[in-house]
Length: 267
Image 1: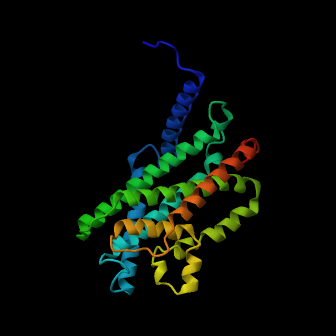
Image 2: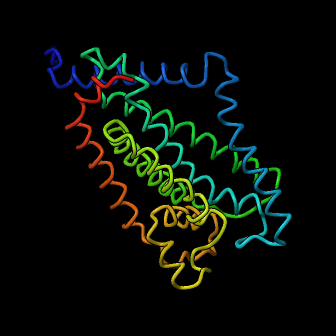
Image 3: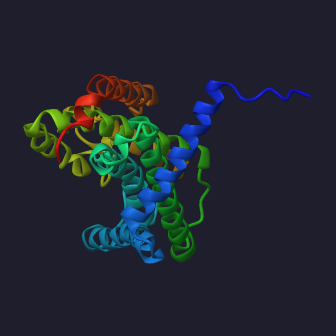
């Protein structure tokens, strides 16, 4: 029997796990409040959004571009997009939200980033499961869905959001004008990423332009897992993963170089 005490590396890992767990609890309390209603609202809001957009679409079109269910078609584009959008937005505020805690030596920027990533991923996953469950049960939708494919696409969207959000931590802190520039670029993505349409149905030049957007590929990836008959012409999973991982590595590199400056930045 080996009674040797754990080495310094093991102790460091255990410390990071404890700090990350504590930060998750703190983030939940800060973001959603101490009462269950705060977290329930975070779940209810996207459910209401899908319902509202479904009613709007049904008023202007007789049939969705795929399948027979308007709620399912819209959700198949909206859900993967929100994995990116909510993640990138939440991650970008990591340092400002935890500035006081980051003054303690045991709390690192990495701990704050991991805690926020886990919390947002759990929230988005719960929202997605709830929305799809309601659509299937209340809408009478009966079709085989590829759960593994949905998880892969949602995971790619979350990692892309992590990367963009981590880059923005540094860029927002160092360049005040960048916040406005990023907002201008990011705002129309909801309309041009394929949430409401299928990129392959667009005219050639427009389709080619849309497919430069990794979010369009993520939505096609997610839809392909929901609709077995959907071929998703032009989908490039490798393109998505390359960009997502490149953004993560770039964000972490920028954070390592600028961590001290960001810690000392005045709010």
